[in-house]
Amino acid sequence: MTPLSRRAFATAAMACVLMGCAGHPNHRATTAPAVSTPPPPHAAARAVHPLGRSVPVGLRIPAIGVDTPVMQLGLAPDGSVQVPPIQADDRAGWYRQSPTPGQVGPSVLLGHVTVGAYGDGVFRHLARLHRGDRIVVRLENGTSAVFTVGDVRTVAKTDFPAQDVYGDVNRPELRLITCGGPRSGDGYLDNVIVFATLSSAAP
Amino acid sequence: MRRTVLSALALGSTIVLAGTVPAFADGPSPVPSTRPGAAAPAGPSPVPATRSSAPSAVPSAAPTRANGRGQVSVVPKGAPDTGVTAVSSSSGSEGGLIGGGAAAALVAGGAAVFVVRRRRATGA
View (tube, each protein chain N blue to C red):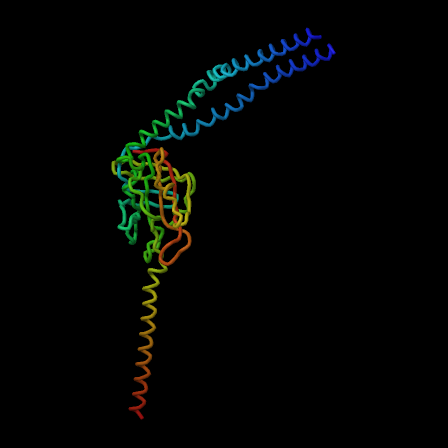
């Protein structure tokens, strides 16, 4: 009995010591990811400082050959956003109830994909943009805000993601909107939305 | 027997206690010991850094919120209508052109037939 109890005691003691040792790595393993997760938002937040308010006057998207003046747009009588006029050499428009490009928040620019009998609109090839493409917005104060495309989405007009487009964000962002998808009557069933974030500012 | 059992129990509990005490001491101790070197700022930083960035984001976003509204002060209704198809707008004018052309051809043909018949009638 005595040798048995000694063995049991020794085994219990070893088990206790081993359990005590084994407990700590788990602790580190759980804390490690918590430490590693914060850096991405830090890096994103440090990337660029927001710009002051200045109305956009020009838009250049080298990847799809866009270089256009920018007009200002408000609200239509029915509460929808105004769109640039249907004309030859149409241009893009900035929704003036949204932040100016470079300010914190979603700055919204719109343009036509096609302008009826006049043919292609200024945003004809917007859906061809890819993640990482550059968008340069010239501002009234002579500076330029450079954005980088993060996402390009084609969404049904009946399911327009108003919150994603107009909702508050914690950094300077840009939305380019046009129509796309299947045609219906004299219009389109979908919207093409480009989501971009401020990557730099140039004088 | 009893002595051995009792002494075993006493020793076991001391070991358990000894094992737990380092565990308590070890919990905080690796934190400063590993973090001062590698992640000393990271230890405090996840909490204050996210908080410091959170307040910085809130005040910076706040100025754009006019009168407590969102960054987009008036959210438009519905989806933007940013495309007029060429088919519909031009189909009207093209249809008119085709119709007009066909009508003109019919009128011209009728007139020619009428003239030819008239000439034949007068000639005979």
